[in-house]
Image 1 (cartoon, rainbow, N blue to C red):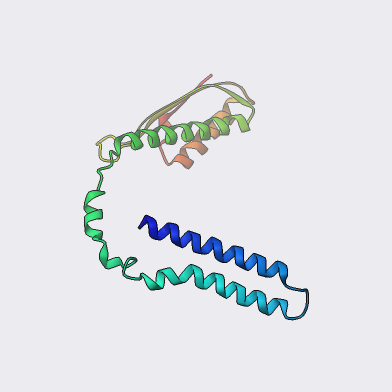
Image 2: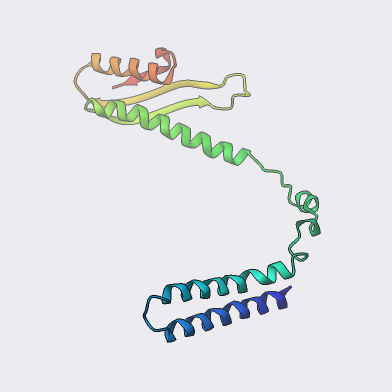
Length: 164
């Protein structure tokens, strides 16, 4: 197979070299585009002809696909991926909470989210969100933000604790 591929590559290189030399020799006239088309067909024929001649070597029936499928079946350990996804999800939740407060001139000192994201477990979901803030306009604004976050995350407002 390697000999076949190397001889095929040699034929292609030789055809391209011959085509280039012929193109350089051609005068610039009306017939040049037709001659270039014939040269292109010649190069294309040199690329395709070994495949046509040796079509049995390229037959799909020759290869046992089921054997390859059986050899390449792997078990994927999903636990590490689940942990990474949980971490990313919790970080995104934290960013949502922090951004809501920062949009209203609050400085978030600390944000903790306690959640169980494994849906197969009994206590899955967000258990609590604790946010320690500074600054801001008034207590009413923080309560309004708390209500908005609860609506957005679809949790009860009692699960969100705001400390000043």
